Image 1: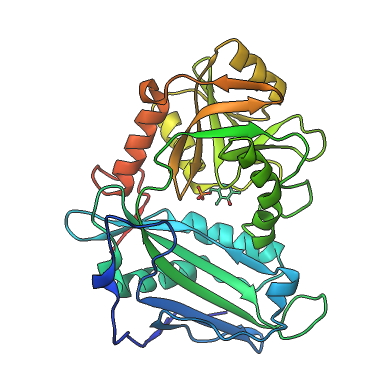
Image 2: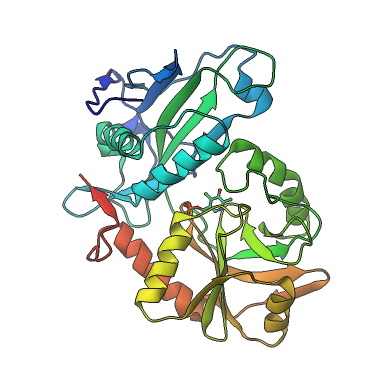
Length: 356
Ligand SMILES: *Cc1c(COP(=O)(O)O)cnc(C)c1O
């Protein structure tokens, strides 16, 4: 493992692209900051990390991640407050989850302290890329993949860990329509649903495409065994307000990604005295509550969107229209609070921000 003394060699770019960014037209995930961090693993240990100009990678055609999918990632956001300080929202939880993904995928771990420090250094080098504009952020993408040039199924002996960043605007500005999926599966018990690993997203593309053809933005996944319980959405956890109680599928099963945003929303709601239940949520219960008009709010939670209100829910041949997103109390209040907190506009009463 890496020693406490983290020395990072930095090779600065000689041609910054910062001035060429069109901040009024910023597509999500297509504009990349000037630098990236690269750290290789071989001979049984992590080598010295380096920050280099952002650029392409040179890969062997047999690179094992491409063939067999040992590949994991994280996602978080940095913002800038009025004082020009950079703020990163709860990177400790991402570090912990990355560690868990490493273990599940038989990949070498990175200590949580090192992970956070590598993030901090990478963002610091490109701190001019962290937007100070309302709704904007610097999306941070750490990832790791297997690099053995070997055709065979076994854990790779070599890996690459990279962090790059992208300035982004607001992600889902519009409320989303979701469809309850009762045939395809995102994650099964004993599988890799809890890991943020590449294949989970590849597997979801086809069912998501079918749902898109029907006019939905995303799926609402159900459990793999009986398709009887609500799990989560594409890259968001989900929460429903039923009869004044926020109900969200519990993370006890290893089929649900443990989201930082959802965890934060649950903690905020509890602090505010809004009743929250983390438990199994039957599709039948949700559908009945929708029929009775008891679902007063519903939203997805994830770093990219922060909070995305759910406007309509499709179930078999029915389409349930939820209350007008503009009139909702809970999601608007929590969403605004979370966005203000992340942007450093209000006091960080939970101590969630890393600032530098
Ligand atoms: C990343 C992700 C989430 C959201 O997690 P956050 O930590 O809030 O960004 C939820 N579900 C899946 C499947 C994800 O990949």
